[in-house]
Length: 620
Image 1 (tube, rainbow, N blue to C red):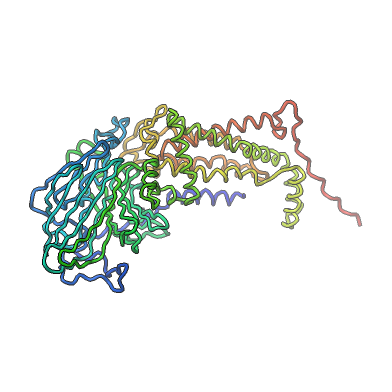
Image 2 (cartoon, one colour):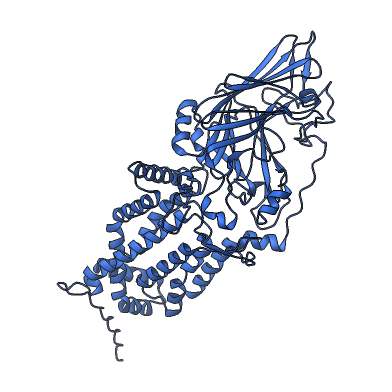
Protein backbone atom coordinates (compact mmCIF):
# COMPACT_ATOMS: atom_id res chain seq x y z
CA UNK A 1 0.00 0.00 0.00
CA UNK A 2 1.56 3.30 -1.14
CA UNK A 3 1.45 6.64 0.63
CA UNK A 4 -1.49 7.93 -1.40
CA UNK A 5 -3.55 4.85 -0.52
CA UNK A 6 -2.80 5.31 3.19
CA UNK A 7 -3.91 8.96 3.04
CA UNK A 8 -7.11 8.03 1.20
CA UNK A 9 -7.84 5.33 3.80
CA UNK A 10 -7.35 7.73 6.72
CA UNK A 11 -9.54 10.42 5.15
CA UNK A 12 -12.22 7.85 4.34
CA UNK A 13 -12.32 6.62 7.94
CA UNK A 14 -12.67 10.18 9.23
CA UNK A 15 -15.50 10.82 6.77
CA UNK A 16 -17.22 7.61 7.89
CA UNK A 17 -17.11 8.77 11.50
CA UNK A 18 -18.11 12.39 10.91
CA UNK A 19 -20.33 12.23 7.85
CA UNK A 20 -23.67 12.76 9.60
CA UNK A 21 -22.26 15.53 11.77
CA UNK A 22 -20.80 17.28 8.70
CA UNK A 23 -24.00 16.97 6.65
CA UNK A 24 -26.14 18.27 9.51
CA UNK A 25 -23.83 21.28 9.83
CA UNK A 26 -23.91 22.04 6.09
CA UNK A 27 -27.57 21.11 5.53
CA UNK A 28 -29.49 21.48 8.78
CA UNK A 29 -32.56 19.21 8.81
CA UNK A 30 -35.86 20.94 8.21
CA UNK A 31 -38.25 21.12 11.14
CA UNK A 32 -40.98 18.52 11.16
CA UNK A 33 -44.39 19.82 10.16
CA UNK A 34 -46.96 20.14 12.90
CA UNK A 35 -49.62 17.44 12.82
CA UNK A 36 -53.09 18.55 11.87
CA UNK A 37 -56.53 17.00 11.87
CA UNK A 38 -56.04 15.35 8.50
CA UNK A 39 -56.06 11.78 7.31
CA UNK A 40 -52.94 9.74 8.08
CA UNK A 41 -51.96 9.32 4.46
CA UNK A 42 -52.86 11.30 1.38
CA UNK A 43 -53.95 8.05 -0.23
CA UNK A 44 -56.30 5.46 1.21
CA UNK A 45 -54.42 2.20 1.84
CA UNK A 46 -55.73 -1.06 0.44
CA UNK A 47 -56.26 -3.58 3.21
CA UNK A 48 -55.58 -7.29 2.79
CA UNK A 49 -58.53 -9.26 1.52
CA UNK A 50 -60.07 -6.31 -0.35
CA UNK A 51 -59.69 -4.92 -3.84
CA UNK A 52 -60.62 -1.36 -3.06
CA UNK A 53 -59.36 1.42 -0.83
CA UNK A 54 -60.75 1.79 2.66
CA UNK A 55 -63.61 4.26 2.92
CA UNK A 56 -65.25 5.91 5.88
CA UNK A 57 -68.80 6.21 4.60
CA UNK A 58 -71.28 7.12 7.27
CA UNK A 59 -68.55 8.20 9.73
CA UNK A 60 -67.21 11.70 10.25
CA UNK A 61 -63.51 12.04 9.44
CA UNK A 62 -63.04 15.31 11.26
CA UNK A 63 -61.07 13.74 14.09
CA UNK A 64 -59.41 10.90 12.22
CA UNK A 65 -55.76 9.99 12.11
CA UNK A 66 -54.02 12.60 14.16
CA UNK A 67 -52.88 9.86 16.51
CA UNK A 68 -54.35 11.96 19.31
CA UNK A 69 -56.70 11.05 22.11
CA UNK A 70 -60.00 12.89 22.47
CA UNK A 71 -59.69 15.35 25.31
CA UNK A 72 -62.02 14.67 28.20
CA UNK A 73 -63.22 17.17 30.77
CA UNK A 74 -63.88 14.37 33.24
CA UNK A 75 -61.14 14.06 35.89
CA UNK A 76 -58.73 11.25 35.18
CA UNK A 77 -59.04 8.10 37.26
CA UNK A 78 -55.91 6.00 37.77
CA UNK A 79 -55.95 2.37 38.89
CA UNK A 80 -52.77 0.43 39.74
CA UNK A 81 -52.39 -3.33 39.31
CA UNK A 82 -49.13 -5.00 40.25
CA UNK A 83 -47.27 -8.21 41.02
CA UNK A 84 -43.70 -9.00 42.06
CA UNK A 85 -42.23 -7.92 38.70
CA UNK A 86 -44.31 -5.07 37.31
CA UNK A 87 -46.59 -2.24 38.39
CA UNK A 88 -49.14 -1.19 35.74
CA UNK A 89 -51.02 2.10 35.94
CA UNK A 90 -54.27 2.26 33.94
CA UNK A 91 -56.11 5.47 33.07
CA UNK A 92 -59.78 6.16 32.50
CA UNK A 93 -58.81 8.52 29.67
CA UNK A 94 -58.73 6.00 26.86
CA UNK A 95 -59.22 3.00 29.15
CA UNK A 96 -55.67 1.81 28.62
CA UNK A 97 -52.20 1.29 30.07
CA UNK A 98 -50.60 4.61 30.93
CA UNK A 99 -47.36 3.41 32.52
CA UNK A 100 -45.52 0.15 33.19
CA UNK A 101 -42.92 0.21 35.99
CA UNK A 102 -40.35 -2.59 36.25
CA UNK A 103 -39.92 -2.94 39.99
CA UNK A 104 -36.63 -4.90 39.91
CA UNK A 105 -34.72 -2.47 37.66
CA UNK A 106 -33.59 1.04 38.62
CA UNK A 107 -34.03 3.86 36.13
CA UNK A 108 -30.31 4.60 36.23
CA UNK A 109 -27.17 3.46 38.01
CA UNK A 110 -26.33 5.01 41.37
CA UNK A 111 -22.61 5.48 40.73
CA UNK A 112 -23.35 8.62 38.71
CA UNK A 113 -25.23 10.32 41.50
CA UNK A 114 -22.52 12.97 41.92
CA UNK A 115 -23.12 14.08 38.34
CA UNK A 116 -26.89 14.09 38.72
CA UNK A 117 -27.44 11.03 36.55
CA UNK A 118 -29.19 8.85 39.13
CA UNK A 119 -32.66 8.87 40.62
CA UNK A 120 -34.58 6.66 42.99
CA UNK A 121 -37.08 5.76 40.26
CA UNK A 122 -37.49 2.37 38.65
CA UNK A 123 -37.26 1.67 34.92
CA UNK A 124 -40.45 2.44 33.03
CA UNK A 125 -42.11 1.74 29.68
CA UNK A 126 -44.43 4.22 27.92
CA UNK A 127 -43.28 6.97 30.29
CA UNK A 128 -44.43 10.50 29.38
CA UNK A 129 -46.16 9.16 26.25
CA UNK A 130 -49.22 11.30 25.39
CA UNK A 131 -51.20 8.19 24.31
CA UNK A 132 -51.64 5.18 26.63
CA UNK A 133 -50.98 1.69 25.29
CA UNK A 134 -54.03 -0.17 23.89
CA UNK A 135 -55.99 2.95 23.14
CA UNK A 136 -58.26 2.60 20.09
CA UNK A 137 -57.84 5.60 17.80
CA UNK A 138 -59.57 6.45 14.54
CA UNK A 139 -62.43 8.89 15.03
CA UNK A 140 -65.11 9.87 17.53
CA UNK A 141 -66.93 6.68 16.53
CA UNK A 142 -64.15 4.74 18.29
CA UNK A 143 -63.55 7.08 21.24
CA UNK A 144 -66.66 9.05 22.09
CA UNK A 145 -65.66 11.42 24.86
CA UNK A 146 -62.58 9.27 25.57
CA UNK A 147 -63.64 8.54 29.16
CA UNK A 148 -63.91 4.89 30.29
CA UNK A 149 -65.22 3.22 33.44
CA UNK A 150 -62.48 1.25 35.21
CA UNK A 151 -63.23 -1.77 37.38
CA UNK A 152 -60.60 -3.73 39.24
CA UNK A 153 -60.76 -7.52 38.81
CA UNK A 154 -58.84 -10.43 40.32
CA UNK A 155 -55.28 -9.72 39.12
CA UNK A 156 -56.36 -7.30 36.43
CA UNK A 157 -58.64 -4.50 35.34
CA UNK A 158 -61.65 -3.95 33.09
CA UNK A 159 -62.29 -0.76 31.07
CA UNK A 160 -65.57 -0.21 29.25
CA UNK A 161 -67.72 2.40 27.60
CA UNK A 162 -70.53 2.72 25.05
CA UNK A 163 -69.45 4.37 21.81
CA UNK A 164 -71.64 6.56 19.60
CA UNK A 165 -73.90 4.30 17.59
CA UNK A 166 -74.46 1.82 20.40
CA UNK A 167 -71.25 -0.21 20.14
CA UNK A 168 -69.91 -1.44 23.47
CA UNK A 169 -66.11 -1.28 23.77
CA UNK A 170 -64.65 -3.47 26.52
CA UNK A 171 -60.95 -3.97 27.37
CA UNK A 172 -59.73 -6.55 29.85
CA UNK A 173 -56.17 -6.69 31.14
CA UNK A 174 -54.91 -9.63 33.20
CA UNK A 175 -51.43 -9.74 34.74
CA UNK A 176 -49.46 -12.98 34.53
CA UNK A 177 -45.92 -13.93 35.49
CA UNK A 178 -42.49 -13.16 33.99
CA UNK A 179 -43.56 -9.68 32.81
CA UNK A 180 -46.47 -11.07 30.79
CA UNK A 181 -50.06 -9.90 30.68
CA UNK A 182 -52.98 -10.40 28.32
CA UNK A 183 -54.98 -7.62 26.66
CA UNK A 184 -58.46 -8.40 25.35
CA UNK A 185 -60.28 -5.81 23.20
CA UNK A 186 -63.94 -6.50 22.47
CA UNK A 187 -66.31 -4.54 20.19
CA UNK A 188 -69.95 -5.55 20.69
CA UNK A 189 -72.88 -4.11 18.78
CA UNK A 190 -75.55 -3.68 21.42
CA UNK A 191 -77.88 -1.73 19.12
CA UNK A 192 -80.66 -3.17 17.01
CA UNK A 193 -79.11 -2.20 13.68
CA UNK A 194 -75.85 -2.68 11.77
CA UNK A 195 -73.04 -0.27 12.63
CA UNK A 196 -70.12 0.48 10.35
CA UNK A 197 -66.89 1.37 12.10
CA UNK A 198 -63.87 3.07 10.50
CA UNK A 199 -60.46 1.50 10.52
CA UNK A 200 -59.03 1.11 13.98
CA UNK A 201 -55.60 2.20 15.06
CA UNK A 202 -54.79 0.29 18.25
CA UNK A 203 -51.72 1.75 19.92
CA UNK A 204 -49.51 -0.98 21.38
CA UNK A 205 -47.14 1.46 23.10
CA UNK A 206 -44.56 4.17 22.58
CA UNK A 207 -40.81 3.69 22.52
CA UNK A 208 -39.52 6.15 25.12
CA UNK A 209 -36.03 6.99 26.43
CA UNK A 210 -34.51 5.26 29.43
CA UNK A 211 -34.29 8.50 31.40
CA UNK A 212 -33.84 12.24 30.94
CA UNK A 213 -30.25 11.73 29.71
CA UNK A 214 -30.92 9.07 27.07
CA UNK A 215 -29.91 10.27 23.59
CA UNK A 216 -32.50 7.88 22.02
CA UNK A 217 -30.01 6.43 19.50
CA UNK A 218 -30.85 2.89 20.69
CA UNK A 219 -34.60 3.51 20.80
CA UNK A 220 -36.87 2.06 18.14
CA UNK A 221 -39.58 -0.36 17.08
CA UNK A 222 -39.38 -3.84 15.59
CA UNK A 223 -41.85 -6.09 13.83
CA UNK A 224 -41.82 -9.62 12.43
CA UNK A 225 -43.37 -10.39 9.04
CA UNK A 226 -43.04 -14.17 9.20
CA UNK A 227 -39.67 -14.21 7.47
CA UNK A 228 -37.50 -11.58 9.08
CA UNK A 229 -37.43 -8.88 11.73
CA UNK A 230 -37.26 -5.23 10.71
CA UNK A 231 -35.88 -2.54 13.02
CA UNK A 232 -36.99 1.08 12.61
CA UNK A 233 -35.20 3.65 14.72
CA UNK A 234 -34.57 7.36 15.04
CA UNK A 235 -32.27 7.33 12.00
CA UNK A 236 -35.13 6.16 9.75
CA UNK A 237 -37.40 9.00 10.83
CA UNK A 238 -34.54 11.50 10.51
CA UNK A 239 -33.93 10.21 6.92
CA UNK A 240 -30.25 9.74 7.56
CA UNK A 241 -28.30 8.10 4.76
CA UNK A 242 -27.09 8.98 1.29
CA UNK A 243 -25.08 12.03 0.31
CA UNK A 244 -27.66 14.75 0.90
CA UNK A 245 -29.94 15.71 3.74
CA UNK A 246 -33.56 14.72 3.11
CA UNK A 247 -36.80 15.85 4.68
CA UNK A 248 -37.46 13.93 7.91
CA UNK A 249 -40.19 11.30 7.86
CA UNK A 250 -43.12 11.49 10.26
CA UNK A 251 -44.80 8.09 9.77
CA UNK A 252 -43.91 4.47 9.06
CA UNK A 253 -46.48 2.14 7.48
CA UNK A 254 -45.88 -1.55 6.73
CA UNK A 255 -47.50 -4.96 6.71
CA UNK A 256 -49.80 -7.07 4.58
CA UNK A 257 -51.71 -9.29 7.02
CA UNK A 258 -48.33 -10.51 8.26
CA UNK A 259 -47.59 -8.52 11.45
CA UNK A 260 -46.95 -11.49 13.77
CA UNK A 261 -45.65 -9.26 16.54
CA UNK A 262 -44.39 -5.76 17.09
CA UNK A 263 -42.35 -4.13 19.84
CA UNK A 264 -41.37 -0.71 21.13
CA UNK A 265 -38.09 -0.55 22.95
CA UNK A 266 -35.15 1.39 24.26
CA UNK A 267 -31.70 -0.01 24.90
CA UNK A 268 -32.58 -2.39 27.74
CA UNK A 269 -36.38 -2.68 27.96
CA UNK A 270 -39.18 -3.55 25.56
CA UNK A 271 -42.93 -3.95 25.22
CA UNK A 272 -43.98 -6.65 22.75
CA UNK A 273 -47.56 -7.17 21.53
CA UNK A 274 -48.21 -10.64 20.08
CA UNK A 275 -51.48 -11.37 18.24
CA UNK A 276 -52.63 -14.99 17.87
CA UNK A 277 -50.42 -16.90 15.42
CA UNK A 278 -53.38 -17.69 13.19
CA UNK A 279 -54.56 -14.06 13.15
CA UNK A 280 -51.64 -11.65 12.65
CA UNK A 281 -52.38 -7.94 12.58
CA UNK A 282 -53.03 -6.50 9.09
CA UNK A 283 -50.71 -3.49 9.21
CA UNK A 284 -48.34 -1.53 11.44
CA UNK A 285 -48.22 2.24 11.82
CA UNK A 286 -45.60 4.24 13.73
CA UNK A 287 -45.24 7.95 14.34
CA UNK A 288 -42.46 10.11 15.71
CA UNK A 289 -44.09 12.19 18.44
CA UNK A 290 -43.06 14.70 21.07
CA UNK A 291 -43.19 13.46 24.64
CA UNK A 292 -44.77 15.31 27.50
CA UNK A 293 -42.26 17.94 28.65
CA UNK A 294 -40.33 17.59 31.86
CA UNK A 295 -41.70 19.48 34.82
CA UNK A 296 -40.09 22.67 36.07
CA UNK A 297 -39.06 20.83 39.23
CA UNK A 298 -37.32 18.09 37.20
CA UNK A 299 -35.43 20.64 35.10
CA UNK A 300 -34.44 22.64 38.19
CA UNK A 301 -33.20 19.49 39.93
CA UNK A 302 -31.32 18.31 36.84
CA UNK A 303 -30.21 21.14 34.51
CA UNK A 304 -28.38 18.61 32.27
CA UNK A 305 -31.60 16.80 31.36
CA UNK A 306 -32.53 16.60 27.68
CA UNK A 307 -35.74 18.61 27.33
CA UNK A 308 -36.68 17.82 23.71
CA UNK A 309 -36.92 14.03 23.84
CA UNK A 310 -39.30 12.23 21.51
CA UNK A 311 -41.00 8.86 21.27
CA UNK A 312 -42.03 6.40 18.55
CA UNK A 313 -45.73 5.66 18.91
CA UNK A 314 -46.60 2.30 17.32
CA UNK A 315 -50.00 0.80 16.52
CA UNK A 316 -51.68 -2.13 14.80
CA UNK A 317 -54.03 -1.09 12.00
CA UNK A 318 -57.29 -2.96 11.45
CA UNK A 319 -59.60 -2.30 8.47
CA UNK A 320 -63.09 -0.85 8.73
CA UNK A 321 -65.78 -3.32 9.65
CA UNK A 322 -69.54 -3.61 9.84
CA UNK A 323 -71.06 -5.10 12.97
CA UNK A 324 -74.44 -6.77 12.66
CA UNK A 325 -76.87 -6.50 15.58
CA UNK A 326 -75.49 -8.37 18.63
CA UNK A 327 -72.30 -9.25 16.72
CA UNK A 328 -69.04 -9.21 18.69
CA UNK A 329 -65.47 -8.84 17.42
CA UNK A 330 -62.80 -9.85 19.90
CA UNK A 331 -59.01 -9.41 19.61
CA UNK A 332 -56.61 -10.95 22.10
CA UNK A 333 -52.94 -10.06 22.56
CA UNK A 334 -50.18 -11.48 24.68
CA UNK A 335 -47.99 -8.66 25.95
CA UNK A 336 -44.47 -8.76 27.34
CA UNK A 337 -43.31 -5.63 29.17
CA UNK A 338 -39.89 -6.19 30.67
CA UNK A 339 -36.12 -6.40 30.22
CA UNK A 340 -34.37 -7.43 27.01
CA UNK A 341 -32.79 -10.40 28.75
CA UNK A 342 -31.98 -13.21 26.34
CA UNK A 343 -32.92 -16.11 28.64
CA UNK A 344 -36.31 -14.55 29.37
CA UNK A 345 -36.98 -13.78 25.71
CA UNK A 346 -35.79 -17.24 24.68
CA UNK A 347 -38.45 -18.77 26.94
CA UNK A 348 -40.95 -16.36 25.43
CA UNK A 349 -40.01 -17.53 21.92
CA UNK A 350 -40.40 -21.16 22.98
CA UNK A 351 -43.90 -20.37 24.28
CA UNK A 352 -45.23 -18.21 21.45
CA UNK A 353 -42.89 -18.98 18.54
CA UNK A 354 -42.40 -16.47 15.70
CA UNK A 355 -38.80 -15.66 16.73
CA UNK A 356 -39.81 -13.27 19.50
CA UNK A 357 -36.27 -13.55 20.91
CA UNK A 358 -35.01 -11.55 17.93
CA UNK A 359 -36.13 -8.46 19.83
CA UNK A 360 -32.56 -8.58 21.15
CA UNK A 361 -31.51 -7.19 17.76
CA UNK A 362 -28.60 -9.59 17.23
CA UNK A 363 -29.65 -10.51 13.68
CA UNK A 364 -30.70 -7.08 12.37
CA UNK A 365 -27.36 -5.29 12.62
CA UNK A 366 -24.25 -5.39 10.46
CA UNK A 367 -23.47 -8.93 9.36
CA UNK A 368 -27.03 -10.20 9.94
CA UNK A 369 -27.46 -13.73 11.22
CA UNK A 370 -23.78 -14.58 10.74
CA UNK A 371 -22.68 -11.97 13.29
CA UNK A 372 -25.82 -12.67 15.33
CA UNK A 373 -24.62 -16.25 15.82
CA UNK A 374 -21.42 -15.01 17.48
CA UNK A 375 -23.34 -12.46 19.55
CA UNK A 376 -25.64 -15.14 20.97
CA UNK A 377 -22.76 -17.55 21.58
CA UNK A 378 -20.76 -14.86 23.42
CA UNK A 379 -23.77 -13.82 25.53
CA UNK A 380 -24.55 -17.42 26.48
CA UNK A 381 -20.88 -17.97 27.36
CA UNK A 382 -20.79 -14.84 29.51
CA UNK A 383 -24.01 -15.79 31.29
CA UNK A 384 -22.75 -19.37 31.73
CA UNK A 385 -19.62 -18.13 33.46
CA UNK A 386 -21.70 -15.79 35.62
CA UNK A 387 -23.80 -18.73 36.85
CA UNK A 388 -20.51 -20.11 38.23
CA UNK A 389 -20.24 -16.95 40.39
CA UNK A 390 -17.79 -15.30 37.97
CA UNK A 391 -18.31 -11.50 37.84
CA UNK A 392 -19.28 -10.19 34.42
CA UNK A 393 -16.06 -8.18 34.11
CA UNK A 394 -13.97 -11.29 34.78
CA UNK A 395 -16.23 -13.28 32.43
CA UNK A 396 -15.36 -10.85 29.60
CA UNK A 397 -11.65 -11.28 30.37
CA UNK A 398 -11.95 -15.08 30.50
CA UNK A 399 -13.78 -15.17 27.15
CA UNK A 400 -11.12 -12.91 25.64
CA UNK A 401 -8.36 -15.23 26.88
CA UNK A 402 -10.19 -18.27 25.47
CA UNK A 403 -10.57 -16.56 22.08
CA UNK A 404 -6.87 -15.71 22.06
CA UNK A 405 -5.92 -19.29 22.94
CA UNK A 406 -8.11 -20.63 20.13
CA UNK A 407 -6.46 -18.32 17.61
CA UNK A 408 -2.98 -18.64 19.13
CA UNK A 409 -1.56 -21.01 16.45
CA UNK A 410 -2.91 -18.84 13.64
CA UNK A 411 -1.62 -15.61 15.17
CA UNK A 412 1.76 -17.19 15.89
CA UNK A 413 2.06 -18.40 12.29
CA UNK A 414 1.12 -14.92 11.11
CA UNK A 415 3.80 -13.25 13.23
CA UNK A 416 6.45 -15.71 12.05
CA UNK A 417 5.46 -15.19 8.43
CA UNK A 418 5.73 -11.41 8.76
CA UNK A 419 9.14 -11.70 10.43
CA UNK A 420 10.40 -13.92 7.62
CA UNK A 421 9.04 -11.48 5.06
CA UNK A 422 11.09 -8.77 6.75
CA UNK A 423 14.23 -10.91 6.47
CA UNK A 424 13.57 -11.38 2.74
CA UNK A 425 13.02 -7.69 2.13
CA UNK A 426 16.34 -7.11 0.25
CA UNK A 427 15.46 -9.83 -2.26
CA UNK A 428 11.92 -8.47 -2.60
CA UNK A 429 13.28 -5.01 -3.44
CA UNK A 430 15.73 -6.50 -5.92
CA UNK A 431 12.93 -8.40 -7.71
CA UNK A 432 10.75 -5.29 -7.76
CA UNK A 433 13.56 -3.25 -9.25
CA UNK A 434 14.58 -5.89 -11.79
CA UNK A 435 11.05 -6.57 -13.09
CA UNK A 436 9.46 -3.16 -12.57
CA UNK A 437 8.41 -3.07 -16.22
CA UNK A 438 6.90 -6.58 -16.21
CA UNK A 439 4.23 -6.97 -13.51
CA UNK A 440 3.40 -10.59 -14.43
CA UNK A 441 7.03 -11.64 -14.22
CA UNK A 442 7.43 -9.78 -10.93
CA UNK A 443 4.47 -11.59 -9.36
CA UNK A 444 5.80 -14.96 -10.58
CA UNK A 445 9.26 -14.38 -9.09
CA UNK A 446 7.77 -13.11 -5.84
CA UNK A 447 5.63 -16.25 -5.60
CA UNK A 448 8.69 -18.44 -6.16
CA UNK A 449 10.54 -16.56 -3.41
CA UNK A 450 7.68 -17.03 -0.93
CA UNK A 451 7.39 -20.73 -1.70
CA UNK A 452 11.15 -21.29 -1.46
CA UNK A 453 11.29 -19.80 2.04
CA UNK A 454 7.84 -21.12 3.11
CA UNK A 455 6.31 -17.69 3.57
CA UNK A 456 2.61 -16.88 3.07
CA UNK A 457 1.94 -13.13 2.61
CA UNK A 458 -1.76 -13.61 3.35
CA UNK A 459 -0.98 -14.83 6.86
CA UNK A 460 -0.29 -11.26 7.98
CA UNK A 461 -3.93 -10.12 7.88
CA UNK A 462 -5.75 -13.47 8.10
CA UNK A 463 -6.06 -13.57 11.93
CA UNK A 464 -7.49 -10.05 11.98
CA UNK A 465 -10.03 -10.84 9.23
CA UNK A 466 -11.18 -14.01 11.01
CA UNK A 467 -11.66 -12.17 14.31
CA UNK A 468 -13.69 -9.29 12.81
CA UNK A 469 -17.05 -11.19 13.08
CA UNK A 470 -16.23 -12.01 16.70
CA UNK A 471 -15.47 -8.38 17.50
CA UNK A 472 -18.69 -7.19 15.80
CA UNK A 473 -20.55 -9.93 17.67
CA UNK A 474 -19.07 -8.65 20.94
CA UNK A 475 -20.12 -5.11 20.03
CA UNK A 476 -23.65 -6.23 19.11
CA UNK A 477 -24.00 -8.29 22.28
CA UNK A 478 -22.58 -5.74 24.71
CA UNK A 479 -24.62 -2.93 23.16
CA UNK A 480 -27.88 -4.41 24.48
CA UNK A 481 -26.81 -6.85 27.21
CA UNK A 482 -28.80 -5.77 30.24
CA UNK A 483 -26.70 -8.22 32.29
CA UNK A 484 -23.84 -5.70 32.22
CA UNK A 485 -26.03 -2.88 33.54
CA UNK A 486 -24.61 -2.07 36.94
CA UNK A 487 -21.76 -4.61 36.70
CA UNK A 488 -18.53 -3.09 38.04
CA UNK A 489 -14.80 -3.46 37.45
CA UNK A 490 -12.11 -1.46 39.23
CA UNK A 491 -13.16 2.19 38.85
CA UNK A 492 -15.93 1.27 36.38
CA UNK A 493 -19.34 1.12 38.05
CA UNK A 494 -21.40 0.22 34.97
CA UNK A 495 -19.94 -1.92 32.18
CA UNK A 496 -22.87 -1.06 29.91
CA UNK A 497 -21.81 2.61 29.85
CA UNK A 498 -18.60 4.53 29.26
CA UNK A 499 -16.27 4.57 32.28
CA UNK A 500 -16.66 8.29 32.96
CA UNK A 501 -14.85 9.38 36.12
CA UNK A 502 -15.67 13.08 35.82
CA UNK A 503 -16.96 15.59 33.26
CA UNK A 504 -15.25 18.80 32.19
CA UNK A 505 -18.04 21.38 31.72
CA UNK A 506 -18.17 23.58 28.64
CA UNK A 507 -16.45 21.15 26.25
CA UNK A 508 -19.51 19.31 25.00
CA UNK A 509 -19.01 20.83 21.54
CA UNK A 510 -16.00 18.60 20.78
CA UNK A 511 -17.13 16.40 17.85
CA UNK A 512 -17.63 12.69 18.58
CA UNK A 513 -16.11 12.89 22.08
CA UNK A 514 -18.06 15.58 23.92
CA UNK A 515 -21.65 15.34 25.17
CA UNK A 516 -23.67 18.34 23.93
CA UNK A 517 -24.95 20.60 26.71
CA UNK A 518 -23.10 18.49 29.28
CA UNK A 519 -19.34 18.61 28.72
CA UNK A 520 -16.34 16.47 27.93
CA UNK A 521 -16.36 13.10 29.75
CA UNK A 522 -13.03 11.83 31.02
CA UNK A 523 -13.01 8.10 30.15
CA UNK A 524 -9.69 6.43 31.08
CA UNK A 525 -10.28 2.96 29.58
CA UNK A 526 -10.50 4.06 25.90
CA UNK A 527 -7.22 5.95 26.41
CA UNK A 528 -5.61 2.80 27.84
CA UNK A 529 -7.03 0.81 24.92
CA UNK A 530 -5.49 3.14 22.34
CA UNK A 531 -2.16 3.15 24.21
CA UNK A 532 -2.01 -0.66 24.16
CA UNK A 533 -2.98 -0.70 20.49
CA UNK A 534 -0.21 1.78 19.64
CA UNK A 535 2.21 -0.46 21.53
CA UNK A 536 0.96 -3.48 19.62
CA UNK A 537 1.32 -1.67 16.28
CA UNK A 538 4.91 -0.76 17.04
CA UNK A 539 5.69 -4.41 17.76
CA UNK A 540 3.95 -5.65 14.59
CA UNK A 541 6.41 -6.28 11.74
CA UNK A 542 5.73 -4.13 8.70
CA UNK A 543 5.32 -5.68 5.27
CA UNK A 544 8.25 -5.47 2.87
CA UNK A 545 8.44 -2.33 0.78
CA UNK A 546 6.73 -0.02 3.28
CA UNK A 547 8.60 3.26 3.46
CA UNK A 548 9.19 5.04 6.79
CA UNK A 549 6.42 7.62 6.23
CA UNK A 550 3.81 4.92 5.60
CA UNK A 551 5.06 3.00 8.61
CA UNK A 552 4.59 6.05 10.84
CA UNK A 553 1.06 6.57 9.54
CA UNK A 554 0.13 2.94 10.11
CA UNK A 555 1.50 3.07 13.64
CA UNK A 556 -0.81 5.94 14.58
CA UNK A 557 -3.90 4.58 12.85
CA UNK A 558 -5.25 3.23 16.20
CA UNK A 559 -5.88 6.81 17.31
CA UNK A 560 -8.84 6.85 14.90
CA UNK A 561 -10.49 4.11 16.95
CA UNK A 562 -10.55 6.49 19.89
CA UNK A 563 -13.37 8.39 18.14
CA UNK A 564 -15.33 5.17 17.62
CA UNK A 565 -14.89 3.73 21.08
CA UNK A 566 -14.66 6.71 23.44
CA UNK A 567 -18.31 6.85 24.52
CA UNK A 568 -19.28 3.22 23.89
CA UNK A 569 -19.82 0.48 26.43
CA UNK A 570 -16.82 0.05 28.73
CA UNK A 571 -17.42 -3.71 28.54
CA UNK A 572 -16.51 -3.59 24.84
CA UNK A 573 -13.49 -1.38 25.54
CA UNK A 574 -12.40 -3.80 28.28
CA UNK A 575 -12.54 -6.68 25.79
CA UNK A 576 -10.42 -4.80 23.24
CA UNK A 577 -7.87 -3.66 25.83
CA UNK A 578 -7.37 -7.17 27.20
CA UNK A 579 -7.14 -8.50 23.64
CA UNK A 580 -4.40 -5.96 22.86
CA UNK A 581 -2.42 -6.94 25.97
CA UNK A 582 -2.67 -10.64 25.13
CA UNK A 583 -1.55 -9.97 21.55
CA UNK A 584 1.46 -8.04 22.85
CA UNK A 585 2.35 -10.93 25.19
CA UNK A 586 2.04 -13.38 22.32
CA UNK A 587 4.31 -11.27 20.13
CA UNK A 588 6.90 -11.20 22.89
CA UNK A 589 6.74 -14.99 23.31
CA UNK A 590 6.92 -15.60 19.56
CA UNK A 591 9.87 -13.26 19.19
CA UNK A 592 11.70 -15.01 22.03
CA UNK A 593 11.31 -18.45 20.45
CA UNK A 594 11.25 -17.80 16.70
CA UNK A 595 14.51 -18.19 14.74
CA UNK A 596 13.32 -15.57 12.28
CA UNK A 597 13.34 -13.01 15.07
CA UNK A 598 16.72 -14.13 16.42
CA UNK A 599 15.20 -14.80 19.82
CA UNK A 600 15.87 -18.50 20.42
CA UNK A 601 19.17 -19.39 22.05
CA UNK A 602 19.18 -22.86 20.54
CA UNK A 603 18.25 -21.88 17.00
CA UNK A 604 20.03 -20.16 14.18
CA UNK A 605 18.15 -17.04 13.14
CA UNK A 606 17.02 -16.66 9.58
CA UNK A 607 19.44 -14.12 8.11
CA UNK A 608 18.51 -11.61 5.51
CA UNK A 609 19.28 -13.11 2.15
CA UNK A 610 21.39 -10.94 -0.08
CA UNK A 611 19.77 -9.98 -3.37
CA UNK A 612 20.98 -11.81 -6.42
CA UNK A 613 23.61 -9.97 -8.42
CA UNK A 614 22.37 -8.14 -11.44
CA UNK A 615 23.10 -9.99 -14.70
CA UNK A 616 26.19 -8.79 -16.50
CA UNK A 617 25.80 -7.22 -19.88
CA UNK A 618 27.36 -9.15 -22.74
CA UNK A 619 30.26 -7.43 -24.41
CA UNK A 620 29.88 -6.82 -28.11
